[in-house]
Image 1 (cartoon, rainbow, N blue to C red):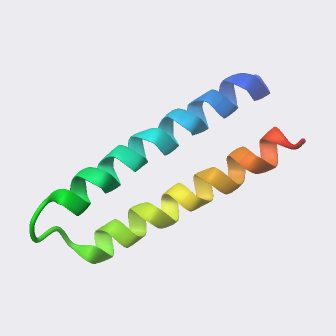
Image 2: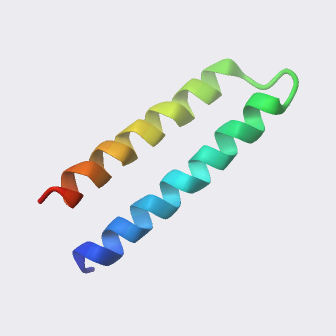
Image 3: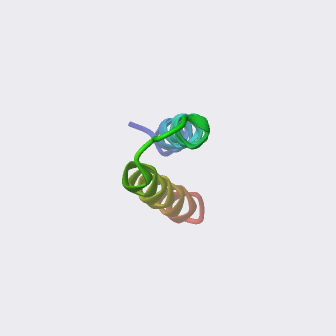
Length: 55
């Protein structure tokens, strides 16, 4: 997998998680712990994107 395609895949996954988090935050009674876990995953993806983009 090329660097460009890897970055695109990571960005797609990050965007998908962003949408899931936003939807979960609007849902009444959604588990705050699950939202926090999704946010951690988003942060890990963002860090990986940044690391690869600066390489």
